[in-house]
Length: 156
Image (cartoon, rainbow, N blue to C red; front, side, top):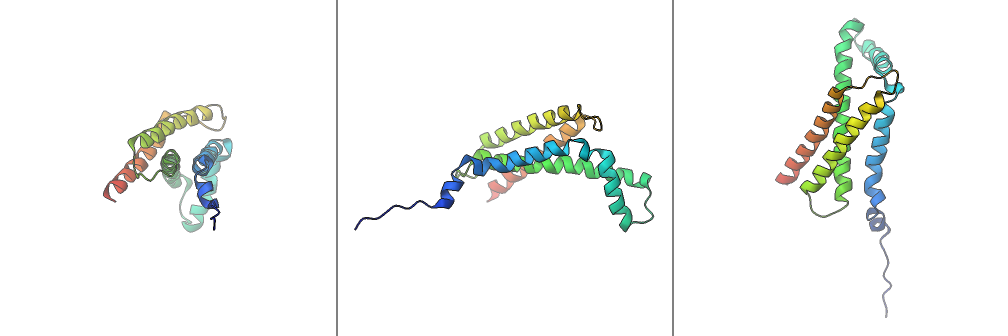
């Protein structure tokens, strides 16, 4: 009696590089879209102000400005933190090892390059301003995410 070897379709998908690279590439496309005029400070400010003002009726726009600034900077930090984790996963590509510095450094280098390119892109968008400070916030967000992952993997 001969056995027919069947391939697990799930493992074939997980062995595909696309399985690991599609999430960070999709997220990078989203970040690129976030850098367009559609997500300029003016547009996000008016939308967010309406939402916050609905809850806090007495809030003036001047009182709201620091909140809007903080939300935008936290968004930079978070979007690049998520990207760093997705990139680490892509470089790891299903390897049973939990941590390699080469994966983290590769992810970090992509974060640095993409953060700088993102601000460069914004310099061509009329309703946006490029800021090295935003790039630094992006890089710090990616760095913190990788450090938290390293600490978690080290303990577990």
